[in-house]
Image (tube, rainbow, N blue to C red; front, side, top):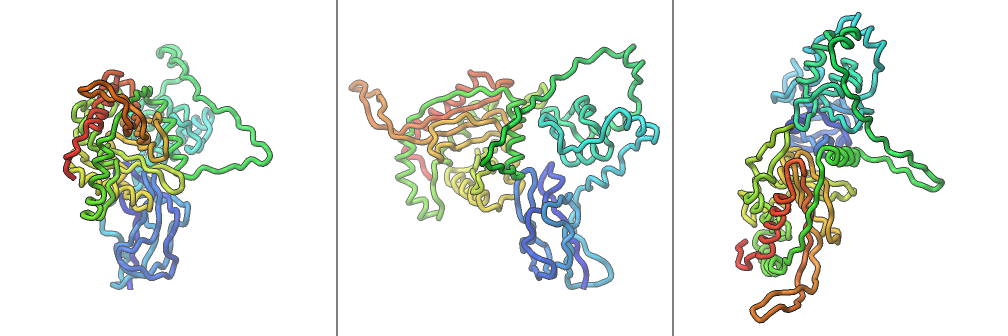
Length: 442
């Protein structure tokens, strides 16, 4: 028999670690190849980790709520084979943060003593919401005892000014060469102080109030929403659309489609098709901002805000939506929605969105003002479809008729999307839906 080390696999670009949230097996259990053995959580998504081999779980190395780095062993299995040497996963994984840290420049003892006099060690978990650090950068900050004050002085070169590994390593390398107070006074101009981060007012807890601790996903959502409002000046435009043709077309095709494909036909594929066509008309909606640069995206990847049974939210992504037929969109949407609600999404299923749609109408809401998911620059909220009296223009004059009406709201980043672009984009989505061809094939 031989030992096999089960390593935490790569979870997608930018993901360096994951938290163990539940083991599906116990020590001593027999598992088969491709059996899911542990549930893990990243900043992107929750997912299961399968074992690539069959064997017996002889030791669990990472317990519930512990963090494991990509490529780190999380369990040991006993497998059939030679006893001469342990076996490890046969995949080339990126270096762990500990391995990367061995290449860091080391401070001298004198420099460390001097730093100890002027700064206090802090926990990166207490950083203000304005500073985003990847797990790797956090580990370097911890090791090098970099204060939050020092972090605010580092100009990040990453997306949205984020501090990258290269930025933090460059800071550490030049840290000991900082000017003395005398040199600073005589040679360097006084830098203006940054405004302190806003502090929430204290909350009074009264007798009988229930205190509910946020779970990990809710914390991530909260941080992302606050960060987006800080980064992007939001503007929202509204429009009301007559979607009677869309409702009639779906009613005509949904039973046929379900019988033929074994899939339900919802309104979402139609909304996605209209958004894709509008993006093709106005490609500057499909962009991201990097400092003073606008990154125009080649691919059209549509995020689909999805409510989870636990009340949280996740945004799976329809990749290359412009290359899918209505039937293909319906299947992709149904698949992502099902896997999202059953915790079957892969990390890559939630990455790479270039534009997002939120269907607030599914909760009976008429309209909403959604927050833009960074680093996108716009998001569309679709309201409930409601029968209402509406004025129709006919060859014999205006008449009042009962129509299927729906509000849409388009929130966009006013740094790069002005009212004309944001408004025209929304009007084109409206036109595609209001003039939906009843002879469209599915």
